[in-house]
Length: 278
Image (tube, rainbow, N blue to C red):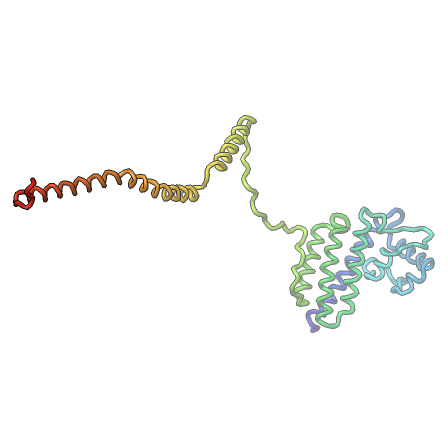
């Protein structure tokens, strides 16, 4: 059995061929004029005569009998034809609603198919898987709801994830399929809806009043230290006033005590005859 990446590269090439046929057939059916497969072969034969350089390196179409025999090289040669020298320009991509997106999608599919067709090692197989994943994203941008339904795009996204896994591609998260619901977001904050204008005015006034009171009142943490500092500053002043008020009374008491002591000593001395003049 071939290596997993070689088998994946072969399947990527086949998927690109399938996508290319689908895009070409959708554009061909949407254009004015005949829409048959034979009319496509006639268009290619006419363009080969008008632009042999552009159609020079292209698979032989003389033996093609159905759409399933067309590959990416032939489909993209028709789709990306500049038609600058055509007698009857058709411009399949330019006639669409989003020609730029359609051209990017076709180029992405062609690049992925070429990378897969020449893949010979694991690195080349991984690169082909990455390019195919990018091509599916471009196809969704250009052809979602037109050439491809959401179910078909989901199938190609699933194939893309499988190719990335089998080729051992790391560090790349494949894009989710279009039908996968997005990841749930954080719930929106609750919004109070007041039924009347009067209720809304009352609520606004209450909020405004609360904000003013909150702005005018200092925090408790800062008020308590302020009161403590004021109390500490006031305490020495009270003590000094108290001491100044009590100081004269204290001296008078001392003087009276000394006078009483002196008088008592004098009386005792007179009784003992020490002080005869008393």
